[in-house]
Length: 462
Image 1 (cartoon, rainbow, N blue to C red):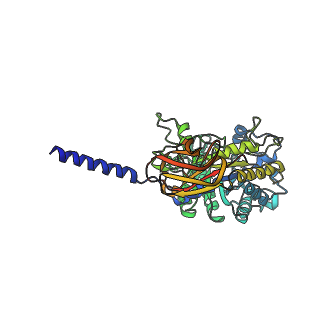
Image 2: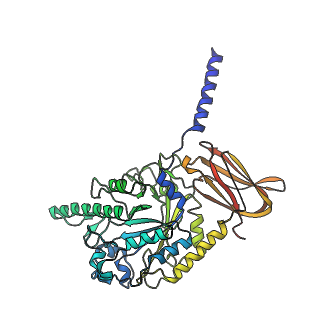
Image 3: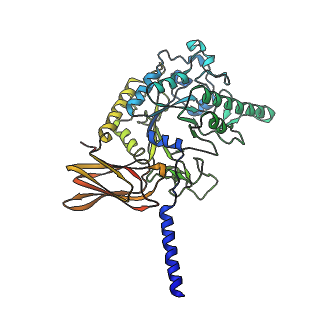
């Protein structure tokens, strides 16, 4: 009897072990795959205060309306030039701030009278959203729209809420919610398929002060990334505006919305944003963001005077790239068209230099392989100095790797170069230069058989 019980326990243990290895990982929705594959994008901020000739002050801008909206007069506006600059850096998508904190709308809005219909520029017939989307499609860049509804200095909306009290404020609140829903309907129906609709600061709670925008996106833009409200986020902010995320950085998350469950006081929410949760039940991948003009104490999302010397160096930008794209996040860089309607010359030059450096370091692997196994060997034609590897999982089948090790064969013996945790869409693993003819990737901890679609090596300092 004891022998039978022991045998049954042994069979059960084998069954449980098999189940653990074949358990189904969390996977992204089809439209979320676009987010990972894009890797790098740009966001263009443009609003009335670009034209006032003074430094931007966010606190004042949220409260004080622009006195004369006819200061908006970009006489050389060229969205083709904007998108060409982003493409030179390697961007695969671009986002335009269609409205921001002033409430002014950069399209021909029927819902919002405070829009390009109300200015003298182009006789009140301009539509920068249309120009922008057209340029994106012309240069094979996926277009996205950013909608700022959390603040509106003209209408007295502060943190989604109409200021004031009593019936007067309640009526304005209800009207504002309807106006926002109509604006989102316009943006969702007039400009073709969109890569993303991004609500600045979220779209709040549709059961409270926020508009009910998610059903509109679902109806008219079913393949569009939605970011975000209190119910849903197709991605998450990575915890800072440095252009980097923490490591490890998992695409899974414990909640279906990006800013976590703030009522749970047992959780460090900042760390959760940066790292995700490898055991999370929802696919909510990370975004890293930073403005191009962000050194010497500046951090400017909009063009401001006298910031020409405050552009990040190529070295800074490569650090961002390797610590965002190289850590399983997607990087968004803030770009600043000037009052003439053009991207400044120095900014354009730096974007070209950055794109060239990305291509120089990672454009052509010295060797490459793939496989559905726990260990892969990569052989070079001859002994070569290498200092980086890229690992990519087939994330359509989930993040399966929990630990990896990269080794090089040196003088006939395997030598560990580096190890790590999360891989996901892309992991750039850097290490001290080593001369070798053979590299090995092993995955000692996994939740299912690894699906490695790229294991490649590089000499980034050549």
